Image (cartoon, rainbow, N blue to C red; front, side):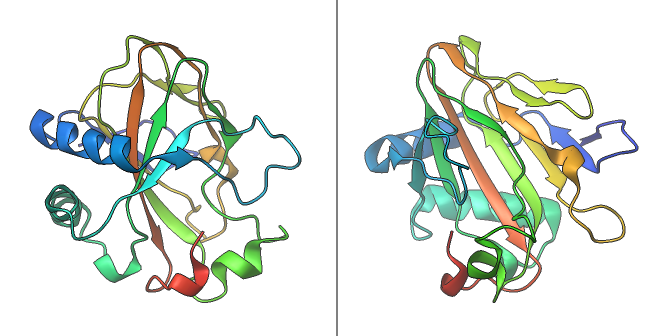
Length: 198
Protein backbone atom coordinates (compact mmCIF):
# COMPACT_ATOMS: atom_id res chain seq x y z
CA UNK A 1 0.00 0.00 0.00
CA UNK A 2 1.50 3.32 -1.07
CA UNK A 3 0.41 6.67 0.32
CA UNK A 4 0.06 9.46 -2.20
CA UNK A 5 2.39 12.26 -1.02
CA UNK A 6 0.10 15.23 -0.49
CA UNK A 7 -0.66 17.34 2.59
CA UNK A 8 -4.14 18.02 1.22
CA UNK A 9 -5.57 14.51 1.03
CA UNK A 10 -5.31 11.12 2.74
CA UNK A 11 -5.01 8.76 -0.25
CA UNK A 12 -3.48 5.35 -0.92
CA UNK A 13 -3.01 3.06 -3.91
CA UNK A 14 -2.23 -0.64 -4.22
CA UNK A 15 -1.49 -2.37 -7.55
CA UNK A 16 -2.71 -5.95 -8.00
CA UNK A 17 -5.20 -5.73 -5.13
CA UNK A 18 -7.84 -7.75 -7.01
CA UNK A 19 -6.59 -10.83 -8.92
CA UNK A 20 -7.33 -11.11 -12.66
CA UNK A 21 -9.87 -13.95 -12.37
CA UNK A 22 -11.93 -12.04 -9.81
CA UNK A 23 -11.74 -8.92 -11.99
CA UNK A 24 -13.16 -10.96 -14.87
CA UNK A 25 -16.01 -12.29 -12.74
CA UNK A 26 -16.91 -8.79 -11.57
CA UNK A 27 -16.84 -7.40 -15.13
CA UNK A 28 -19.23 -10.17 -16.22
CA UNK A 29 -21.63 -9.20 -13.43
CA UNK A 30 -21.50 -5.55 -14.52
CA UNK A 31 -22.15 -6.49 -18.15
CA UNK A 32 -25.17 -8.58 -17.16
CA UNK A 33 -26.84 -5.94 -14.98
CA UNK A 34 -25.73 -2.50 -16.24
CA UNK A 35 -28.06 0.48 -16.61
CA UNK A 36 -27.54 4.19 -17.33
CA UNK A 37 -25.77 5.94 -14.44
CA UNK A 38 -27.52 8.61 -12.41
CA UNK A 39 -26.31 11.38 -10.10
CA UNK A 40 -27.85 13.00 -7.03
CA UNK A 41 -27.45 16.54 -8.40
CA UNK A 42 -26.30 17.06 -12.00
CA UNK A 43 -27.03 20.79 -11.87
CA UNK A 44 -28.88 20.48 -15.16
CA UNK A 45 -25.95 18.97 -17.09
CA UNK A 46 -27.37 15.82 -18.73
CA UNK A 47 -23.89 14.81 -19.92
CA UNK A 48 -22.25 15.12 -16.48
CA UNK A 49 -22.17 11.35 -16.01
CA UNK A 50 -22.54 9.22 -19.13
CA UNK A 51 -21.35 5.82 -17.93
CA UNK A 52 -23.40 2.76 -17.04
CA UNK A 53 -23.83 1.46 -13.49
CA UNK A 54 -24.55 -1.84 -11.79
CA UNK A 55 -25.42 -2.51 -8.16
CA UNK A 56 -23.63 -5.76 -7.35
CA UNK A 57 -25.73 -8.29 -5.44
CA UNK A 58 -24.11 -9.08 -2.06
CA UNK A 59 -24.92 -12.80 -2.48
CA UNK A 60 -22.76 -13.22 -5.59
CA UNK A 61 -19.59 -15.28 -4.84
CA UNK A 62 -17.37 -12.70 -6.57
CA UNK A 63 -18.86 -9.90 -4.48
CA UNK A 64 -18.46 -11.88 -1.27
CA UNK A 65 -14.78 -12.42 -2.11
CA UNK A 66 -14.26 -8.74 -2.92
CA UNK A 67 -15.90 -7.71 0.36
CA UNK A 68 -13.55 -10.10 2.17
CA UNK A 69 -10.50 -8.53 0.53
CA UNK A 70 -11.68 -5.03 1.42
CA UNK A 71 -12.44 -5.96 5.03
CA UNK A 72 -9.03 -7.56 5.53
CA UNK A 73 -7.34 -4.47 4.13
CA UNK A 74 -9.24 -1.55 5.63
CA UNK A 75 -10.68 -2.98 8.89
CA UNK A 76 -13.73 -0.71 8.48
CA UNK A 77 -16.93 -2.11 9.99
CA UNK A 78 -18.75 -3.77 7.05
CA UNK A 79 -22.04 -2.47 8.46
CA UNK A 80 -20.96 1.04 7.47
CA UNK A 81 -20.43 0.08 3.83
CA UNK A 82 -22.78 0.85 0.99
CA UNK A 83 -23.44 -1.97 -1.50
CA UNK A 84 -20.63 -2.31 -4.02
CA UNK A 85 -21.31 -0.52 -7.30
CA UNK A 86 -19.82 -1.30 -10.69
CA UNK A 87 -19.35 1.16 -13.53
CA UNK A 88 -18.75 0.57 -17.24
CA UNK A 89 -17.47 3.27 -19.61
CA UNK A 90 -17.56 3.01 -23.39
CA UNK A 91 -15.58 5.23 -25.77
CA UNK A 92 -16.48 8.87 -25.14
CA UNK A 93 -18.14 8.26 -21.78
CA UNK A 94 -17.03 10.06 -18.62
CA UNK A 95 -18.00 11.32 -15.16
CA UNK A 96 -17.08 14.98 -14.95
CA UNK A 97 -15.27 16.45 -11.94
CA UNK A 98 -17.15 15.63 -8.74
CA UNK A 99 -16.71 14.67 -5.12
CA UNK A 100 -18.13 11.50 -3.55
CA UNK A 101 -19.47 13.22 -0.46
CA UNK A 102 -22.86 14.92 -0.42
CA UNK A 103 -22.77 18.71 -0.19
CA UNK A 104 -24.15 19.62 3.27
CA UNK A 105 -25.91 22.61 1.67
CA UNK A 106 -27.20 20.57 -1.28
CA UNK A 107 -30.85 19.82 -1.93
CA UNK A 108 -30.32 16.05 -1.56
CA UNK A 109 -28.19 16.05 1.58
CA UNK A 110 -31.05 15.32 3.99
CA UNK A 111 -32.43 12.64 1.70
CA UNK A 112 -29.18 10.74 1.33
CA UNK A 113 -27.48 11.35 4.68
CA UNK A 114 -30.21 11.63 7.33
CA UNK A 115 -29.86 8.08 8.67
CA UNK A 116 -26.35 6.92 7.79
CA UNK A 117 -24.42 10.18 7.75
CA UNK A 118 -21.85 11.41 5.27
CA UNK A 119 -19.61 9.26 3.08
CA UNK A 120 -16.23 8.80 4.71
CA UNK A 121 -13.92 6.59 2.62
CA UNK A 122 -14.02 5.68 -1.07
CA UNK A 123 -12.41 2.44 -2.27
CA UNK A 124 -12.19 2.21 -6.06
CA UNK A 125 -10.72 -0.65 -8.09
CA UNK A 126 -9.96 -0.65 -11.81
CA UNK A 127 -11.01 -4.05 -13.17
CA UNK A 128 -9.19 -3.77 -16.49
CA UNK A 129 -6.38 -1.90 -18.20
CA UNK A 130 -7.94 0.54 -20.66
CA UNK A 131 -6.52 0.76 -24.21
CA UNK A 132 -6.52 4.58 -24.20
CA UNK A 133 -7.97 7.32 -22.01
CA UNK A 134 -10.20 6.73 -19.01
CA UNK A 135 -7.80 8.10 -16.39
CA UNK A 136 -9.02 9.43 -13.05
CA UNK A 137 -7.77 12.96 -12.51
CA UNK A 138 -7.53 14.61 -9.11
CA UNK A 139 -7.03 18.19 -10.29
CA UNK A 140 -6.55 19.88 -6.90
CA UNK A 141 -3.57 17.67 -5.98
CA UNK A 142 -2.36 17.26 -9.59
CA UNK A 143 -2.58 13.45 -9.55
CA UNK A 144 -3.61 11.19 -12.41
CA UNK A 145 -4.32 7.45 -12.21
CA UNK A 146 -4.31 5.41 -15.42
CA UNK A 147 -6.68 2.42 -15.28
CA UNK A 148 -4.70 -0.74 -14.54
CA UNK A 149 -6.48 -4.03 -13.93
CA UNK A 150 -6.68 -4.88 -10.22
CA UNK A 151 -5.33 -1.55 -8.93
CA UNK A 152 -6.98 -0.07 -5.85
CA UNK A 153 -7.17 3.66 -5.21
CA UNK A 154 -8.74 4.80 -1.93
CA UNK A 155 -9.16 8.11 -0.19
CA UNK A 156 -10.69 9.78 2.82
CA UNK A 157 -13.43 12.20 1.78
CA UNK A 158 -12.88 14.21 4.97
CA UNK A 159 -10.22 16.51 6.33
CA UNK A 160 -8.63 15.67 9.70
CA UNK A 161 -11.24 17.84 11.44
CA UNK A 162 -14.06 15.77 9.93
CA UNK A 163 -15.28 18.34 7.41
CA UNK A 164 -15.69 17.48 3.72
CA UNK A 165 -12.47 17.71 1.74
CA UNK A 166 -12.84 19.50 -1.63
CA UNK A 167 -9.34 18.30 -2.59
CA UNK A 168 -10.97 14.92 -3.34
CA UNK A 169 -12.52 16.42 -6.48
CA UNK A 170 -11.94 13.92 -9.29
CA UNK A 171 -12.84 13.44 -12.94
CA UNK A 172 -13.33 10.05 -14.63
CA UNK A 173 -11.97 11.18 -17.98
CA UNK A 174 -13.31 10.03 -21.34
CA UNK A 175 -12.34 6.61 -22.61
CA UNK A 176 -10.62 6.98 -25.99
CA UNK A 177 -10.28 3.33 -26.97
CA UNK A 178 -11.74 0.12 -25.52
CA UNK A 179 -13.85 -0.21 -22.38
CA UNK A 180 -13.28 0.72 -18.75
CA UNK A 181 -14.65 -1.23 -15.78
CA UNK A 182 -14.48 0.05 -12.22
CA UNK A 183 -15.97 -0.97 -8.89
CA UNK A 184 -16.58 1.50 -6.08
CA UNK A 185 -17.23 0.89 -2.40
CA UNK A 186 -18.28 3.82 -0.21
CA UNK A 187 -18.38 3.85 3.59
CA UNK A 188 -20.58 5.98 5.83
CA UNK A 189 -20.32 7.52 9.29
CA UNK A 190 -23.00 5.15 10.61
CA UNK A 191 -24.35 1.74 9.57
CA UNK A 192 -25.83 1.68 6.07
CA UNK A 193 -29.57 2.14 5.77
CA UNK A 194 -31.71 1.59 2.70
CA UNK A 195 -33.54 4.74 3.78
CA UNK A 196 -30.47 6.62 2.56
CA UNK A 197 -29.99 4.59 -0.62
CA UNK A 198 -28.50 6.80 -3.32
